[in-house]
Image (tube, rainbow, N blue to C red; front, top):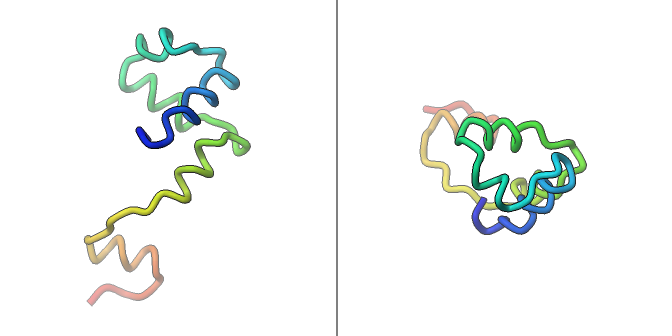
Length: 70
């Protein structure tokens, strides 16, 4: 998320009217609610999809690949 902070800030401003000061005042829960409530057109959603993730849990790997964990 930090790599995409400009996109996050732009989305929060566009969708909720929150400037940097208002974002800083949000609780962790409020911030999470705002992020999860972003519209399908939000730039952050696409940036998040393109962000590589390290997955080491066999169950997660199985869920992503569709190959059962052994």
